[in-house]
Length: 125
Image (cartoon, rainbow, N blue to C red; front, side, top):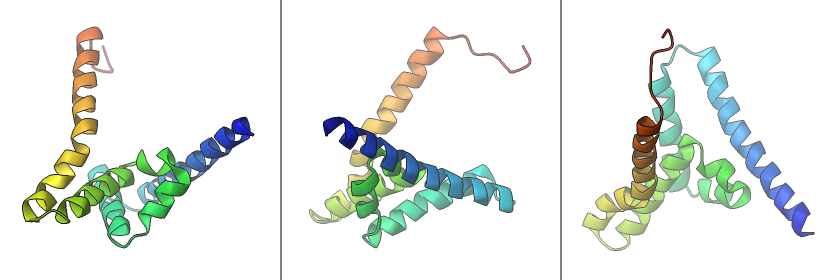
C-alpha cells in the first residue's frame, strides 16, 4: 500500500502542477501579455488565493504540484506575511523575506556554482 500512496502523491502533484502550467500556457497563447506580466499575475494569484484561504487546501492535496510553480512562491510570501503579522507589524514586513530566503539563497548559490562549472555562451557560438 505504501507504493500506491507514493504513486498517488506523484499523480496529484503532476495533475495540479500541470493544470497551473496549462493555465499559464493558455494565457500566453490567447493574450499579448509579456512573460513578466504573466509571472506577476500568477504570483499575485497565489497571494490572493492564500489570503482567501483557498491555496492551503490545494497545497495539502497536491504538495509540490502547488508549491513549485510561481503561484507557490506567492503562497510562500503570503504565508510568511500572515505568520509574521501574528507577532507584530515589523514581523509582518520581514516574514515574507524570512520565508523565501532559503529558496532564493539556494537558487543564487547553485546558479553561481553552475556558472563556475560550465562555460556559458550565446546560442549562436
